[in-house]
Image 1: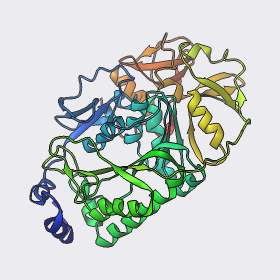
Image 2 (image 1 turned 45 degrees about the vertical axis):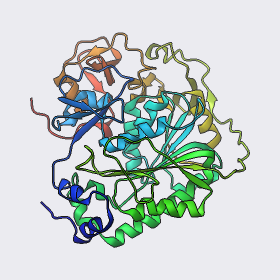
Image 3 (image 1 turned 120 degrees about the horizontal axis):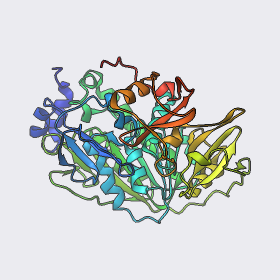
Amino acid sequence: MQSLPDKFVQRLNDNFPKAEVLIPALDTQSPVSIRLNPNKKRDLNQLEFEEKVTWCGQGHYLKSRPKFTLDPLFHAGCYYPQEAGSMYIESVFKSLSLNDAPVVLDLCAAPGGKSTLLATLLNNHGTLISNEVIRSRAFILAENVTKWGYSNCLVTNNDPKDFSALKGSFDVILIDAPCSGEGMFRKDLKSRDEWSEDNANMCSARQKRIVMDVWNSLKENGYIIYSTCTFNPEENENNVAWLMEELDCEVVQLPMFENMQSDSKGYGVYFIPGLTKTEGFYCCLLQKKESIKLNSRIKLDILTKLKSKDKISSFINKKNTLSFWQEGEFTYGAMPSALDFYRQNQKRLKWMKTGVKLGENQRKGFIPDIELALNPSLINQENAIELTEEQALKYLHGDTFELDSTIGIQLVTFKEQPLGFIKHLGNRFNNLYPKEWRIRMDLKF
């Protein structure tokens, strides 16, 4: 096994709490954990569960790491593999004093673990904006948010500084800041080779810039949840001390669980391998006290209201509270609060996902989109085609095969969980599962 960097070990031994426990723990096996999607029925008998994650209601440890790629329910968004320490965001979020419809920004959101957690906590109330500055990662973020299946989620592809124009827009900003990644030294051995003191110092400076870039977009009395996956005080509590000197904010005490450790200044908390069943994780909560003058509201009326849902009515569950609209040939739906945020900021941000794309109006008829299939509060599952596990994996692989059905667009499911659509032609079908989402590994049956 690749040894830990000498200067990293020296720093831990000099001033980090419980270094004598942490250092040997970094050479042990990582725990495996997932978080369930409470908005989707599921039969997960194929997974071997251990105990629950204490600080997250839907978090569970597994006895071993399965091949998630070969589980159709993973692709259906029934659960998300997530490091247990990161799930602590649930306890932090639940401790906040918020209105019934908060506007939440997950600033550095890819690949989407914390965004799907926030979506669960909001439960279609308020609005969640998930952002990722790197475009290739933003596509992955949009895919994972879509599979989770909520209707108040938007995805953007912006640099943090772009949000400075949205003055006083957010009740909560989660900044899971890019860091030197020391907390992943057990899970990702390559990160040990990439570590250096210079890189850690560069991360600290970048983290300060990120927080300063979005500060004006936070409402008065709004919260910043600041987190990293590193043990470096310069990226954690020392950064928080600098922010408190520069900004009108104060630290809010966090919920505590067994074996969590306070940082050296008493600002935030550490999850430490060997003490907690996690990788390394740091979290601090700041509340803004500075008053801010809001931007004047921009009125945009370039969206076309949906005059008739006749073409799509057979695909949509009638019991929904969404607002519908059209842009070009595409039909969309979203919770009214999410649509309002999109309309107000349509020209200010680069959009990757705007609510739920329901489908495209083509000359030959309406073609439903995968986003509709994966949204449990929207999709009408009547007359869906139930697939076997082998058929489901072949479908997710992009294959076609013999399948009895009536001609036309059909929803396919596995264990009653929607996977996507096919276009049945009578003796064969066209696979409508997105090419960029398909399983790429060889399937062996």
